Image: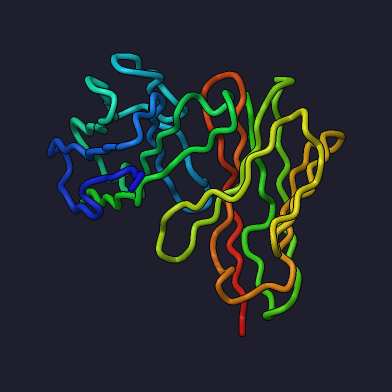
Length: 116
Length: 113
């Protein structure tokens, strides 16, 4: 089954304790991205990756890091989480950037992160 | 910079009523793509439609229809004869040449039986 898998689904952590949210897709997609969803703000893009070893900042990259060492995985790293990073996070993938062909973004199930 | 505005924060209707969700976008690009996603209470994001800027044809899919008007930079979504299962948050999104997908704030639709 084609899917984007995020882990963990729920996480409560303390300020300053490094964490990683994993994202894996089994569709051989080139384009992957991370979003955070906050009430009243919709989803905002954190980082995106056009392909292996190619990443770039989205609209709200501060406090986050990503890596793309292999095509299927795109982990989101919070080196020193703070309470303002409490949010619902989504990973997404698509065969190529959304402007190419008749593509859509496939989203993971979401990770609800609470930083206390 | 691009921007998507969904002015309606919440809409509440009784089952079988029609409901229209507004979406207004801003972009300087001539080539762009518009999307609607549904987020049911379970939290996942469900793709509904993708439309490119060169195709202004309206689209109907079952009880769902979309009205794309470039002249007013709008891409509105109508649910006809709403059902309780339509209760969800609906997001409009815009993608253009900067490889970013920009979402509106979302509209929460509640359909009461």
